[in-house]
Image (cartoon, rainbow, N blue to C red; front, top):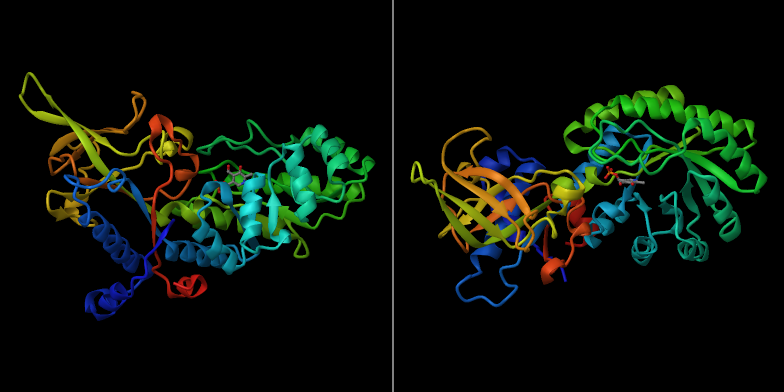
Length: 439
Ligand code: PLP
């Protein structure tokens, strides 16, 4: 079960600290709270005597960061209502917070829909955004009144006509996602030369098409992909009107990244103002944007192998930690991420968020070289090929990795018998979010 971290001490310390008070912003306070949570946990673990599992990897999740991302969204895309993509990180506290903030939810399966409904979210706030759905799941959503769903092909239309003729359908169109980290259009999306026929079939089957959706690819990097997709959606809106459908909503999907959000949002905002009249609702399905930076993971060094360079005699280390590609670092494989290790604790010193915690930049030939490996038997289970720290790391030391909230624990496996359920210590660096969460 998640541990709820009520850090009123930290809040009071923080208020007393003139430096921090002077520089008060959520991100500074967040570092303070996250550091405190990490430190308390790892300083209580003695790897010489602890029980199996005590030194397991764990997350610190800052719900205040999710809250700040929401405020940033509202400021930059005021016309667009976010439906958080649950697949990205179905953390119950994140969903609770976002439900309290009034977002909708993009769900891809029965269990995601069930999780969100069980938290008291109304069916109208859910979109079943999976163009190729399981029959029994369609029957399930029909019984629960979750009407909004996407489609992109004729067979799916016939399925829906049979199982849930009252559904509210979004025609998902193909996008140019070539600049994204994870391409989705290889698999989903109707090309513009098929949309007219699909709309004609939907009409013939007596179905209710209410909108158009697209996704520019997860981790998109070209803002112009949004402009092109909005222009294409405009073409499909016009086709739909010609077939007698009164479309009410445009769904602009996900793909947003924290680092480039303002640039993306500005292109999207202008495109929406130009092509989408004010009476049309606009929704989106952001996942990564909300959670990536909110979670930090701490991993224990369980073993080390010393490699001696025969020519120079210099030692480097193969460092084995208790999480890897088959676990929470599945993001390296599936999401093309390159998580960067920092030193949390070595010997008796906790270094979180200090210059000594940082590795030397890539290419700098200084410090002590380490490669970092996961705990399973597989040679593919390598997190970092080469990283140089000021310190020599040993068994029992701790590393941490930031920005581990998106597509990490949701795709972890139990391969080799390692647990896929890890503690999350929740902190909250925003008072507004605390109030919503009762923290
Ligand atoms: N919507 C759909 C249909 C998706 O497939 C995905 C990701 O795969 C998302 C939303 C979330 O995308 P992101 O995390 O890039 O915002």
